[in-house]
Amino acid sequence: MILEQHTSCPYPAISGSHHTCRFAVKRTKKVFRDHGGLSPAFCERLQHQMDIYHAVGNGLSIAHLYGAFEDEEYVYSVQELCTGECLFAVTQSFQDAGGKPSG
Image 1 (cartoon, one colour):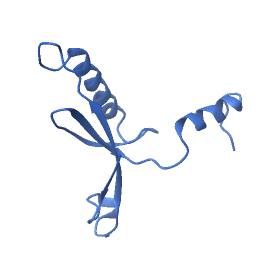
Image 2: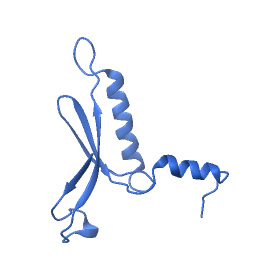
Image 3: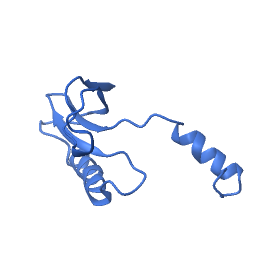
Image 4: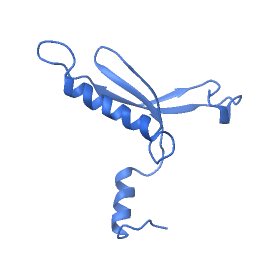
């Protein structure tokens, strides 16, 4: 899912400009226990994912996490939209090159 914001982008590097900011939205279905409440394993997995995003910050080759929200059925994480080759293709070309960067 791609979310677009058609206003001034709130980030300092591009503040004051009017353009479309595009974000990727990851939707994760909530997992419930049989007798109600969220599954502890689901909560741990989701917390682990959020911890990774916060630990690595903006410095590595990982999509930036802007925020998250939820409704009754899903948790949504709003992330940087990465447009380029799919990760599988990049990984495959890296392996085909004997583990050396191509180019």
